[in-house]
Image (tube, rainbow, N blue to C red; front, side, top):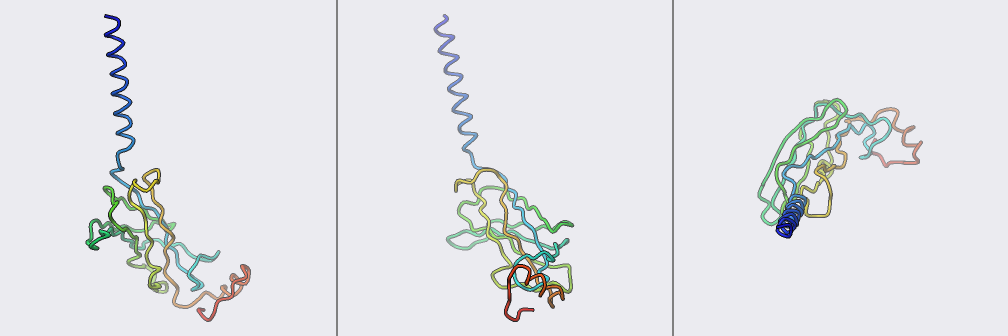
Length: 166
């Protein structure tokens, strides 16, 4: 009788351990893609100390199938007062290429984008060795129509001398 109880206990523990392993290995059902959008006040295509974070920017995440480029998932959101956004992504997108794109700027004087730099690629799958369900996109930006008058000094401080972008 004692032997049967020990076997039952060991079987129960093995089953529990196996179930825990399956739960741990199951792909995430939901991801959070986070990022930030700023206004490039110096028109240099990177952040400076006078870059301004932008509230109210419309951003969109699109996931497209790698083989046929069919849109498989899309979600849109907006940046908060600090220029940050968080987009919820349902499901695992292992066979997709997912990108966040700036869609619309609320600032009339900061609406210009640079082709290829208006998007940030993100990985929305657990099957690439990344832990957790939060993914971070590179910062995105719009550029001011005309560079801020403080830019020459700001860029001189970091030993950056642009061509004639300003």
